[in-house]
Image (cartoon, rainbow, N blue to C red; front, side, top):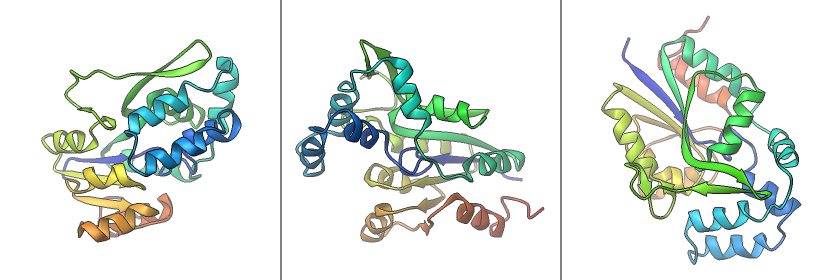
Length: 218
């Protein structure tokens, strides 16, 4: 069997809600105007997220509790195990921060997954991001350049599958062998004429991978 990897975005793809919305709704209502400014192209993604994540002002125990209550696609843990059992390495590729991703993966008992994201840490009642401009995956806009990551993985794996849901995911989708697209990513890829498989859940992703022979039907 070919050596393959399954790579997934986190916010809005594995999770059903972006962590920045959790923060805005609970602790930082001013973030709604900031969100509009960001979406209008007046802010870089990394600046928007850094501002929101550093505006929580809560003890770490409370922040972790909020993180653990983020809803996810219920099928994700079983899907990841199934993919791993069928010979794939699994990566979570996020332009958010690994701080909350690790907590979620641990909660659901998801193991042996490589997280590639912006480094996050708790300090002074907030989450901060440690962005290294010298890192080989550095992006001025996103902190991490998902396209560079996928291209690098393609040097190691025969097949790289990717799943995403939003604009940052449109860039790595160009380089993946097969992209599973949720929500607005579908329209973006249609406009860019980038092939993709439209999905709403990881159950649908699993069925497609079974049809393609990557996952056994047992």
